[in-house]
Image 1 (tube, rainbow, N blue to C red):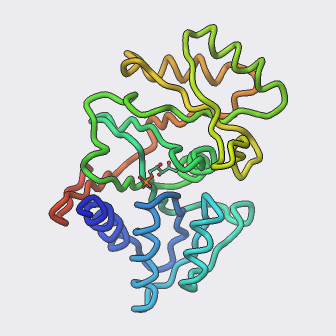
Image 2 (image 1 turned 180 degrees about the vertical axis):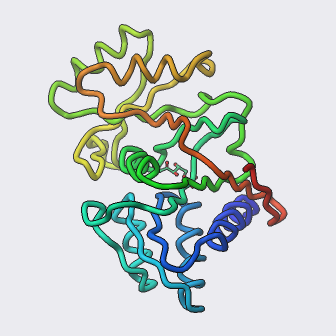
Length: 226
Ligand code: 5RP
C-alpha cells in the first residue's frame, strides 16, 4: 500500500540524520518501526549508536538488529528521538498515543536534545482533534477520574484488548480515548484541564516538542519542516 511507502520514506530519511556516537530515542508505531529498520541497515554499514526505547516492541526490533538498548535510568541525556504521530498541525502540535506509548514517548522526547517527527502526509491536518485523544489514567479510582473528565464536557471510550478486557499500558495504566465532536479550539487549554485532574497521568497532546518534521508522501518522496 502507498501509505506504507510514505511511512517508510519518512523513517528512512530520519535514519539518514543519525550520527555516530548518538544516543537515540526510539518511538513506537509502524512509522517508528520503519525508522528502526532503516537504522539497523545503517548500523550494518558501520554506524555506531546506542538507543533507549519507548516500548518493548521497539526495543525488540532494535535488539534483533543488534542495536544496544540502554535503560532510560542509565543515561544522562538522549541526543535525538525519532517518533511518529497520529496528527500534526502547522504549529507542530500533535496527538500521539495510537499505540498506547505516549507517556514514555513524551518523557523521551522531553529528555532529548531534538525530537524528529516522522509522518505520512495523511497525518498533517489544519487542526488537531479529528482522531481520538488518548489519555493515560491510573487504575486507582479510574471511574471517578472519568466522572471529573466528563465535567469538562469530554467523553470517550476505555481502550480494550481484543477479548474486551481493559488495555494496560506498559506503565500498567488504562487509556481513555477521548472523542471530540470537532477539534478543540485550544488544545493547550483542554490539555491543562485534563492534566490537573488527579488520576490523569498524561495526555497524547504533544506541544513544543517536535523540531524537524519529516513528511513522507505516497510517491516515496519526503519533505522536511525545519
Ligand atoms: C504510539 C504513537 C505512534 O507514534 C502513533 O500512534 C503513530 O503510529 P503509526 O506510525 O503506526 O501510524 O504515538 O503511541
